Image (cartoon, rainbow, N blue to C red; front, side, top):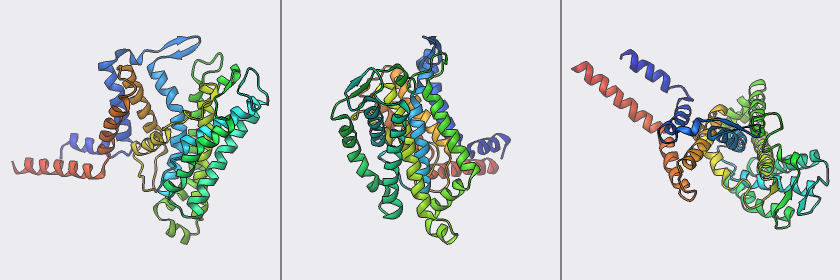
Length: 351
C-alpha cells in the first residue's frame, strides 16, 4: 500500500471529512459559475455579499440544528415541530410588544418581556414534546406531529389571524445588525448558542449521557442514568433553540407572520444533522458536523439563487444534491469503495 493510499484513507476516515468536503464542493462550484460569489463589500456600514448572506441566513438553521442534534442523539428520533414552534415564539413576542394591536411604532411593553415570552413559549413546547416522547413513550415523529400541525394555529391565535408588525428600529437589530458593527447580529446569536451548547456538553456529563441513552436506553438505566429525564431535557433544549431561532426570524421581518416563519425549516434541520455525519438512529453525535451541515444547505440554496435558478425549481436541484451528499456518507458505499481499493491493490501485487 503506497503512501498516497495510506494518506487518503487517513483523511477520509476523519469523521468530519465528508461534511467539510461537501461544503467546500458547493462553495468551489461558485468559482466556475458565479465568480462574484465571494466578493464582499460594505453597504450602510454592514458587510454585504453572497458569502455573507450564506453565513447570515444560515444562523436560524444552525440554531435549530444544534437542538435537533441533541434530540436525535438521545431519542433516535426527530422533532418535526421546530418550524411551527419558531412561529409560535415569534407570535408570542410580537403579541406582547404590540400589546395585542396589529401594528405599532413603539413598544407597548418592555422588549425584554417579549423576548422572555418567546423563550418561555419555546421551552414549554419542548416540555410538551419531551413529556410525550420520554414519559409516554410515543414515537418522536408522531409526538412532535401534534405541534407541527397545531403550532401555526396557536400562532394565529396570538396574531388574531393577521400579521403583527413591530415598526421599531431596535426590534430589527436582532435580525439585522447593530449600528457600528458590520457583521449581522444573527451570526453572533448562532455563535453564542453553539458555544454554550458545546461547553454544556463538554464541561458536564450531559454529552456522555446523551450518547449512552441514545445507544441503549435500557442499559443506561441499569447504569443508574435517568434515561427518561435525559430524553426530556433534549426536547426542552430543542424547544429553547426553536424559540431563539423564532426571535431572530421575527426580527428579520420585524413582524409575526404565523404562516411563513420557520416554514419547512424542520426538514432542513434534520438534513443538517444527517449531512453532518450523525446517525439518525441515535447515539454518538457531532455538534460541529451539524453546524457544517447547516451551512452546506444554506450555501447550496444561495448558490442556486446566484446561478439564476427559479425559486420554484430550487427544491428539485436541492433534493438531487442532498441525495448525492447523503449517499456519499452511506456506510454501504464506503464498504464498496474499500473493497474496490483492496481489489486494485491485490491486482497490482499479482501483476
